[in-house]
Amino acid sequence: MNIGYYPGCALHGSSNDYEQSLRGCLSALDVQLDEMKDWICCGATAAHSLNHKLSLALPARNLAMAERDGFKELFAPCPLCSMQLLKAKKAVADERVRKELSEIVEADIRGESEVLNLIQLFEKVGVERIKSAVKTPLKSITAACYYGCLLTRPPDVVHFDDFEQPTSMESIVAALGAKTVEWNYKTECCGAGMTMSNEEVVLELAHKILSNAAEHGANCLVVACPMCHVNLDMKQAAVERRFEKKLGMVVYYLSDLVGLALGLSAEQLGINRHFVTQA
Amino acid sequence: MENSALGQVLPELVPIQFPDHIEVADCYQCGKCTAGCPVAMHMDVAPNQIVRLAQLGEWEKALRSRAIWDCVGCQTCSTRCPKEVDCAGVMDALREASLARGMAARGKLPVVAFQKIFLENIRRNGRLNELELIGQFKAEVVLNTGRIPFLFKDAGLAPQLGKRKKLHLIPGKARDRKVVKRIFERCSSERKP
Image (tube, rainbow over all chains, first blue to last red; front, side, top):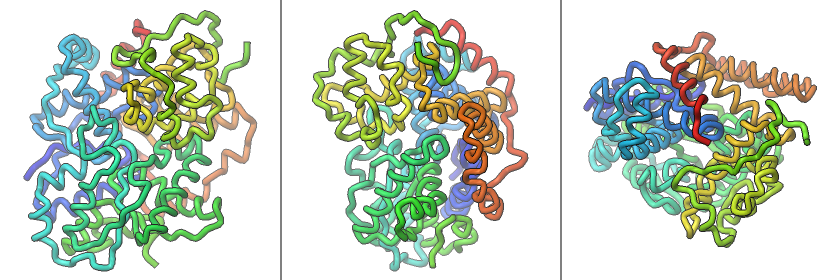
């Protein structure tokens, strides 16, 4: 299966371990990622914070370029990118807005491509198919599945899972032979793009999330977002210093776990490039 | 009039128009937005109070609040609102207006500077150049606050990122950067309020 791929800036930047994980895991499932040629940044938090029109135009341009390249499906592994694309897609359903945005971005936007997040991509491959391809069941894993803010929100834009108690990630993790825990911070925000500009808040939120997962018996966290990974993995040492507490919580991308279960090595998936690694 | 974090101070305060789907008058002040907000305890004005200020047209207080820059944009408030008031959308519109009128709270300079520098980075490169973003952001904060140690904060992370092959000295740029610049121009001039 070939699928249109919008990597977004993070996956071509400091979250390139996520891209390595995706490519490894997906090729083992016979899914090839066709990167769209002319993608640009979706504008992220900065655009929707400072310029509403720009926050629609940037993802709209990406939708138009993906359509030009003939992609019926567009996989965006970063939930913020994916939400921005869906927001633009929703906006262009209004013909007046569609015309205006098409003029702004110098391309005809039809808004027909299906935008997929990582969980939806795995669902498209088929959870049963993944289950039957498992070579190494993940018996030692007890995971807290962490959705963060934008996989399920805003629900009228992303239309994905239950926005308070999502379970789609648990279904995939369970198919790999791992256990999952019930916990309280599944959809609480980790502070996202504030890592640098408001670190104190990020450390506090990350501390709550990591501690709650541990209190409920998880031995690792599973995420499907590059920013969540930065705040929970890269910043974990800073959280430990700030709150004078040892956490040592390994944070996997969902594709890491699928890849491991399919028999790929930690090196092939880039897990050895995370900050917190298994003792 | 107070000094602002960035940009000029413009005295006139025309009413702020929210995107069509936002009807602040619908809010009946139940406070559910504030109850679920992960950062409300750090705000000078709580999310429900921000919506109240918008109902009353108290733009000065809303635009100068630190709260609009504390908001992390997680959408919990909008998702849980029983009256479907898009509180996160209100925050977005207020940030945009606050910056345009030069009223951003001085204490929130790092957040404001980060967003501005991020956008300028995209305007020039089409795709984010992380090292450039970090360098410019640190320089901006140090120049405006005199907090020299901020320059070296997290410097220890650089070699760790390098070891993990997470630093890109020559990042990829978008091919059609001229189009990106034109998109930015069209979105900033003749913009509807």
